[in-house]
Image 1 (cartoon, rainbow over the protein chains, first blue to last red):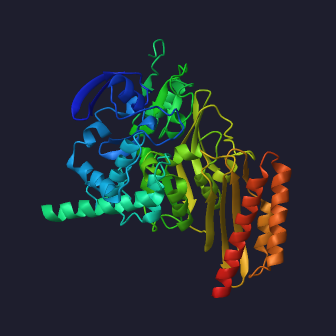
Image 2 (cartoon, rainbow over the protein chains, first blue to last red):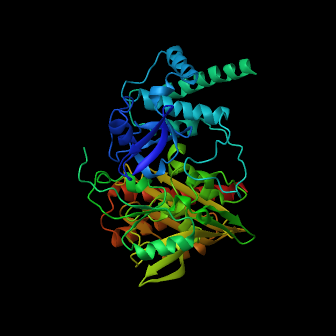
Image 3 (cartoon, rainbow over the protein chains, first blue to last red):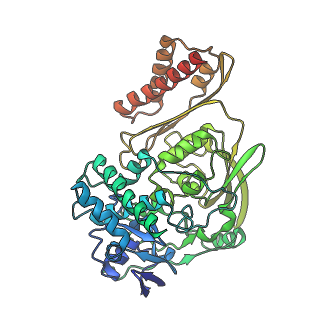
Length: 183
Length: 295
């Protein structure tokens, strides 16, 4: 199956098996180094990427759903200014995730920050499905319980949950300050 | 790396008519909703399966949520995330609680309602809650070159072991209908993750109507994801005739009756799960008592 998509800013035309998981496409066909392993359904949460600007587990996205999609992996995300907020939060709290889950945890935190700051134009929309017209925009803010639920998607135990929540809070402060300065 | 593995043919119907034609022409084709369950199977890729895939992602007819005075109808391809954001005006509160516990938001964006209900061998929290809300699902059956429509209550969709019991090779769930006449007391409790820790997980949903000091229309479902999907008409009837507050000894007796009943019908459930289930059941009834005493 031929798929036209954009990965890390590069427009690519890939010839892959139609049901191949995105994580394997990135590792084997694109040669991405930020994904370290394919968990084969273990739900380890180490393969997060941004698909059309929304965080997804790349091991549960098949190739046939990638037509015209824009995929951002940690390799290109770490070069953006958004990543600096999270890196500074790691430094400020004196804690950094282990190399195995660094990329994934950072992208999960980015997804949480986007939710909390609503930087995306339509944050409720799904990656693959348009939002039903009957639903009303919701006024939802992630509380600590939701943040923990999001962070627990990654099963690596290298950091305590309270430390991660602290990092999210610090990164959120940096992100808000940046937005105020821009305004 | 995967030489010799055939790439499955993908059919992407846009309408139900197109789906009907495709489903009848390719009877062995696999129906693909969100894909989270299929792709989390260990043998998913690479696999020798040559079956084609029918991708429902482009079918707008299956992505609608509508509501009138009597019921809410949810298309089977609505995602858990979309349904959650439909808000309290559309959904019963217990359904919202259930959707919140379903998975993290990142995964909820991919889980579809139909897909979650049609997982063949693991019963997830959504089925538990919809069963007590008297929800029904519309199915299209494809047999012998013909298409037929049926509404099936969610509570009857599964056998006692919790396996999907449709009795047809090929069927498509199109929408779910939830009546708006539900009880004023409801609780949803879950312990452990049903996918990662299915041997320890228990999911419990309960709803009842309180009229002055008496309990009526009690419905509950205790779900042991890979072992049992338990609803007990006997115990529901016993509870329905009780006056509130229920005496703690009576709560205790009924909870042990429930455990005995589950043990008798489903032998594979572990002691830990049984004890967890019993305590959940008791705590829900104690909660009901405490609410009654406060008012």
